[in-house]
Image (cartoon, rainbow, N blue to C red; front, side, top):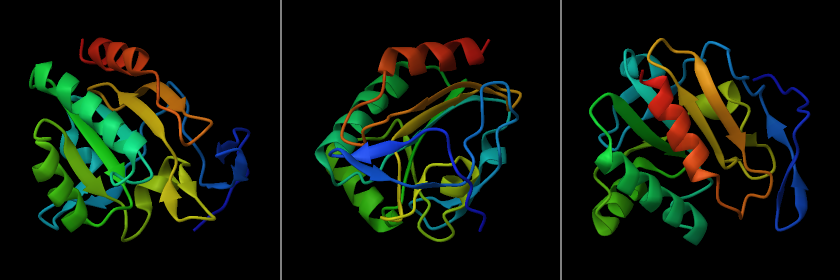
Length: 174
């Protein structure tokens, strides 16, 4: 595990936090990663090849802001064509993610867990060192695997700019 200093800093309720890894930039090839689906099978970015992909990292679906964000992206994903993949990634256990999806009727997004290796968190520079949670961030990736949009939400308790992310993934599918 490599820890790299980030230019970007984030806070939680005003308290500074340290990010582990290096965040990719717009125009970079999206780094691959290994996470776990609700059925405990491993999932990689390469599994979404050929589709525009929206990767949304959140600290935990069991918090109000993360739940609200996942709901919003689930509603939007339900309206999107099958040219898109929308994945919400957290450190929550797959069992908790599956329970949340069932209770909240979230069936248009994929919930993925980074709890095993923190592979996504490190590859995308969103692993919070002090908490071993993921920072709130959004990455839009085009169908050729190039990052077209990056948003790191500076204050973890705030929501991302939904419209910018949705516009980027729509354009990425072209």
